[in-house]
Length: 466
Image (cartoon, rainbow, N blue to C red; front, side, top):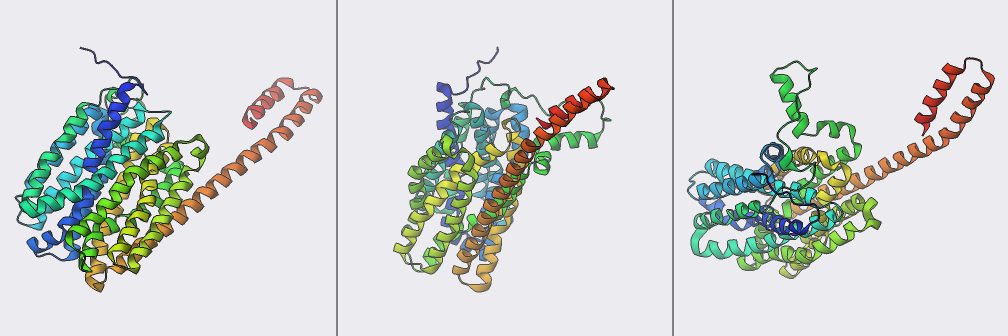
């Protein structure tokens, strides 16, 4: 029986938006509660700060590094099946982690398997939003990212409540049931009526008849289909953005992971320390739609990448405030100010990527983009944990975070400006070169006798100039 395809910007698009909002809250919001379990896991496994930091590191890295595999699944089975499969994997990982007795087992279950499942659910919903929305795409991305804010608000509170009554093992068992709600959200993602819809893609690009069959040729075509190395090589804007975000991620995740242990280390109550992450999430519920509305305005269409750089710079500067004092009131002010910059980063992260690459290559570009930034996510918390074990001073973590964020913002802003200036000069050079090229060739036609050759030469130069 043929499927009924939904139309772009239709009524069902807003239902899909709600499903994407819920999924992003369940997936991207979850790693923020890792700090709630940091001390408990340290005592349970008798581990150092660096060893314990590998759990949120592997979890968040897999949430991004599974992008290419997610692209393959989306291409073969569509976004609906991919989201539901991710919910099942995340649930199995959480349930299995509640029975772990060693850190290596915990890394595999709560880190690798759960992170991979969250990746499938999260990235498939991001991809399908790009096909359901075109004119209101910036607003749709911003509204969907409100789910992340809700997740950041609710996950720490739920974790603290369950941890007191059930312990970390019982809490992770409950989380396994919570992640099954991704399957419900995935069931809502109907196929959309567009030639670029993920559900209509049957697999990788068909093999070229000029290429010799073989494993190497098949692998090359698969890499080109699902990892946009060609875009990375030829698109300077995509290259700058990817490198800038990789450098930015080295500092962006550190405050989320270590803010709760930092507050508790300075004598803040456990409940009040957990409340700090919820303050960031609650503020983002209102700030992200506002950031999306600003980014979606046609007046700011050419400036989104600069707004993203500005938000990154502001986030780096606010971390210096947190390093200056660990008083609870200062930390609350830090969370409120940091929420402004985080809302801008969250609302613009994928919108800027959609502006830089063509939409028909977005899935493969997103896959490469996320797998490269996962490298930074993987090494950032353990590196910070090693610094903490060495210095026994949390302030250095926030100084390190500020360094990465500020330098990344300056790099992206300066590079985008240089590329834009270079492109503008190229257009001006072509416009100036069009007039002197056409007029002399007309004189050649009038004066010359070999008309056919010169007429052909004139036409080629004219088209090239235009």
